[in-house]
Length: 129
Length: 137
Picture 1 (cartoon, rainbow over the protein chains, first blue to last red):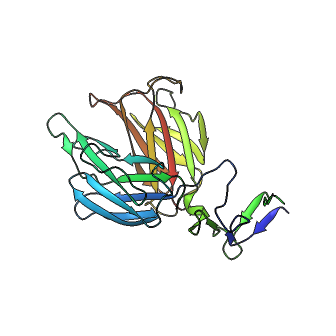
Picture 2: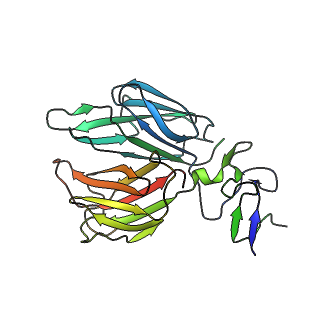
Picture 3: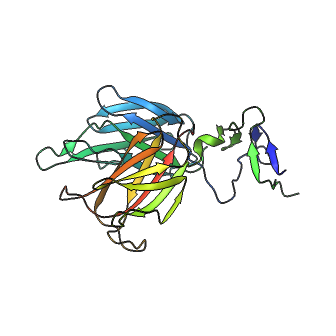
């Protein structure tokens, strides 16, 4: 039976393990952006900061190795309009190894602008420091 | 010695899903936390919608301008993390992306709902790429 029961895996030098042709997510978060922001579930998030309407900062428990990591975003549309979530615009700070800023806005003919959605999802991939 | 273990299955010794891996010089993480639990590629025009490529997805359900993604294995709760991206407006992954907004929402431990809109705020067709992270039940 080719099954290994083990609790911890390191490489031979005690460092980062290589998963052949796979890379696990190093960060994810599901949060409510309305009112007092609330994390529903996360991996590697130390805190979530509300910076203003539709503007949030994710602080990581463990920093990424460099700023070349990748992020994906997801969101639920609201009854009042479509929602877009991304890595921010000119008013948002660039990502660093220890945090990133995200922006949410509503697309609507008369209600367009920064907006606090109920459901925001973010994931991050890359090497940790 | 190459430092490679060739094995077909890994389980935690104490609890089957609990395996800690070193992911930085000293940082460790639970392996199961970072592994994508499901992903799917589909094109909304297909009627009924069907996955062109997938993992951990049992089926797609057409729900009137929305497509429900049914997961093969249930997540542990409804607080998991689906993310999505929209691609071109034809079912050819090599075409240029179109301006689409692809939204996703957790419906249950086994279902994610998705919908696509264009800049005119009307439902549109689009290549859809969805991934699901979180803990399995």
